Amino acid sequence: MNQTTTNDKYSLAERLKRVKKTRWIRFSIVALLYIGWTIWLNNYYVLFGLLLLIDIYLTQYIPWGWWKTSKNPVVRTVMEWVDAIVYALVLVYFIFIFVFQNYQIPSSSLEKSLLVGDFLLVSKMSYGPRVPNTPLHFPLAQHTIPLLNTKSYIEWPQWDYHRLKGFGPVKRNDIVVFNFPAGDTVAVKQPNPDYYTLCFLEGREAVNRNKALYGDIIYRPVDRRENYVKRCVGLPGDTFSIVNNDIYIDGVKQPRPKNMQLNYLVRTNGRYLGNNDFEKWGISVEDRVPIDVSSLNARMNLESWGLLPNPDGSMNPVYELPLTQAMIDMMKKDPSIEQIVGEPGFFGGQTYPLVRSNTWTRSDYGPVWIPKKGATLKLTLENLPIYERPIRNYEHNDLQVRDGKIYINGKETDSYTFKMDYYMMLGDNRDKSADSRYWGFVPEDHIVGKPMFVFLSLDKDKGLFDGKIRFNRMFRSVDSLVN
Image (cartoon, rainbow, N blue to C red; front, side, top):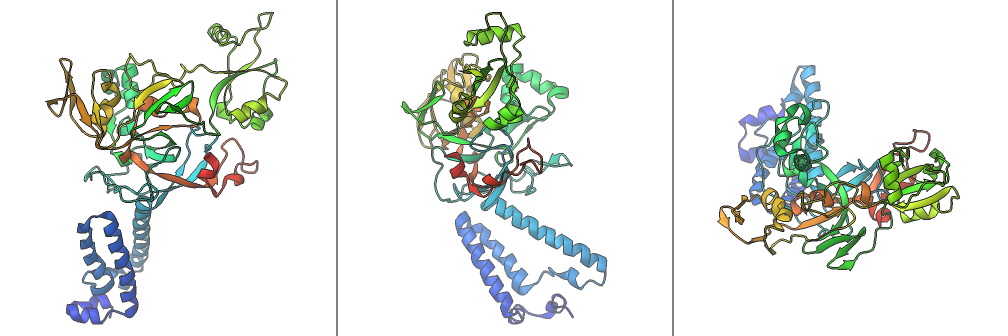
């Protein structure tokens, strides 16, 4: 007769005497790991979970393996699969939350540092893993279950932000994976641009009422928002600015990343560029943008930027291309390249904060002070648009302006002390990156982890037998690729 059946007649002392030595060893190892994890969590209520481990490994009051002795082979087969799947999901859940997770580069915002199609292993231990805000979620989906097109999480319960100890803080120029801050509110049918930009462009009432165009307006918890990856260029307490595409911290010019790209207008001597040219220079298919030189508006803009027509009035082919300095040096050696002109910085749309009076551009931005935990800021009606979202959305205060005065949580004030650190995150592909210039600061509770290495890299422009797998990037550390 099975032990789970015969155990019913035994006392606790007798049950413990009947436990095999191997199970005692297994229990000891698991219990020590569990206790260590509890200390790391700094939440000793979790120690009550030891009672469950004691029953699983030792006392077995609950018949955990009842299905193993079932006379029905279908029950045994089904439960074997259920047991294996549940075990795997629980293991994946804990690994993804506390150790690492995979991440695929979806856009070109970090090219040529990290490429579209790079698959990264992201360390949660680098900055310390977060205890999940939304503990009840499907471990392999961020916010939506594929195919089913339904939420992958249950909103209740919601836990407060708490980060465990890691190897160190976020450092300047680190490549960081984080939850998209402006992704707290989402127009389901038009997630890009973000909800706040849609409201700025179209009006909040128009976005909220037009479900046919924008869909439902939903809220997502911090850890269920989209994952982004950018370079950290500004730390808490820094005064950050961009002047002519160069970053300044506290007035000091910072070196450019070696693979930083900017948009340029490239004119040829009349020759149309082909695939071989673009592949030689390392320009992806989606980045090959020919300018319609037959358009009057386009020609007028090109002339204002120094791209003049030929004496007979014709205009040679012009392309808008994101280029690194190394790519520019290579192109200048080609006799068919006649002119390379930097694209003006006012391209790219409205920058953060989203107010009509804001004249900052993607190439000339700030200066702006980055909030630091414990630091107190003097609030004015002029700087409030910059810090309104951190105070209201990220730190959950009631913020109102009445009769020219600022009220936080019902009290008139002219200052605010921040509860979290904040960061500025930019893409290396500067003119094709939606980053902090457009949606503002990244709060510390949105930080996910640090990419450690590329374990797979697929070129979407190539076939399987035509160089699709970038073997030269596989198993290389991210630091070696981006610095």
